[in-house]
Amino acid sequence: MTLPGVTESPNIWRWPDVYEAENAAQDATGALWEALEEVVDLDGVDLVDVGCGDGYHLPRFATTARRVTGVEPHPPLVERARRRCEDLPTVSVLGGSAAALPLPDRSADVVHARTAYFFGPGCEPGLAEADRVLCPGGALVVVDLDATRHSYGAWMRASAPGYDPRTAERFFADRGFSTRRVDTLWRFPDRATLSAVLHIEFTPAVAGRAVDGTPGLALPVAYRIHVRRRPSGLVPVGR
Image (cartoon, one colour):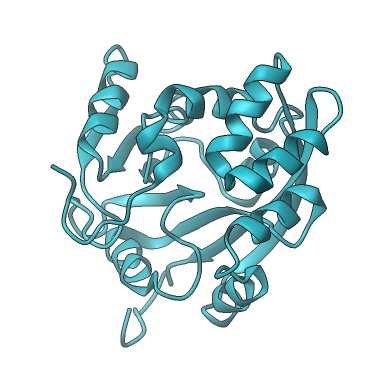
């Protein structure tokens, strides 16, 4: 049973195999990973990946981190992530939510979330939980899609008219995050995979326009990396 109070992520919850193909297509240039490794040190850290899904990124983190913990609220994805990482002794996967991390205080050097939970206003409980589990000087890293950029951003806004990417950006800036913008490509093996992925990300009408508006197999996509460090000294009131 999914944890109470958790909102469904319909793309990966309903179509995990298509989402696997989406993960494989993302960041074909490596620009996002390169930027992430520049803004936060991932070498030898204890890292928590919030909303890890079926654990696609956990093995990559495990190549440099001392310990990696994936946290995911949807039980079928927890099991998929555990199977993916069963031969990685430094990786564990726990059932839990961003607003109630199943981890002790000051147990992580980096808390990472990629296109999961942290979408702007409303995610304050998750911010507080991240601060709780971070060691002093540790970093909360939120990676989201930059819906102000490229055709992908326009399709995203058309499919989710209630989401305002500029409001989300101000939300993070007002809470002390720095932001780095990254341009990369999604590259698909064939048109059928491209179409399947776009149809789990957008409404049917928008997905049709997106497929028609994407010649070939590559699609430019922009991201934002928001970073905030927990103070190393006294912790401010309310943190």
